Image (cartoon, rainbow, N blue to C red; front, side):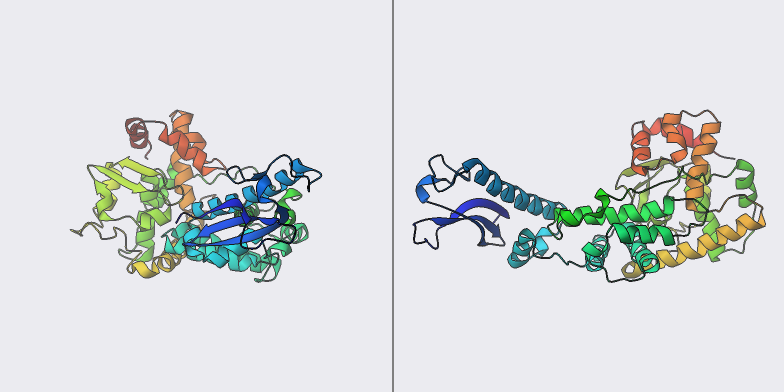
Length: 403
């Protein structure tokens, strides 16, 4: 049975004045229930098809007001069901749970418990990137808010200002790291409201404005890239693999670490690297260049199609933990190399992404192809620009960007 809600008279019980309760009738998991809207009507004056009172229902001095009230309740309930369906949560809820969501009887719902459920949902769906981002949010809240057991209503304007005051960015005055975490909190609030977890009247972002700073560029020059590439490292060490993956990212238009770690032999076909980007779920296809092939040849070694190319993941059940550990080790190595080589930038995989685009810009490759060095605040917008061009155009740009 389709999960839905309709406006109906609850004819299970007739009152002494012969009226019935106007109710929300909920269908879910092959069962039904009623939520009394505290308005009552005679059967003769109820339009079941359109879910409204008919003219002539004299018990109501303001008929239009009552119809607006019950229709508003219907719209709210329908929106909750639709949102739960879109997020894949609806089928997991019992009928009683769905009823509670619609009743919105959880004014003290736990923000942190809801965050944990989201993390579990991302992990179950294989979305390790989002799981990692939201795990980091949990750590951030504990560090700057002083607790890890907040209710939604406690994530208020006052607490957000407290977090803002305590936040200490790595780059003095840079608000972007804080903005990333606050936008994640705001997104959770918005989703919880849509799902009927919490009432919108407590929403803190009506009054609180998230501030950002101008994007700090992380690109390095071709000379710095050459110096980094010339580093001689012991083969098969974490550092050696890390350098290979950093340059693989650079040569593949800034593929992020998570996607590199999850890349399998079967993603290499027909002379291209083809994969789905974890962050945006967009399909990416990149022509194999000599530089890409030189790195791949270090790892393929007659592996089967389902084997991971790089040695980050050895057990799919703990892939997220293994990627987190490797990412930390490699980032630490990149920072050591930057200091050793006097590179005036803190190296990371984002550096590879920014550098690819910035070098391309300096070579007069069209800005629309490079989308300003992939440095947009909204990475999705950057990807839309790239996707608007054919593979040939982007492939030609990629072959030109080297050192």
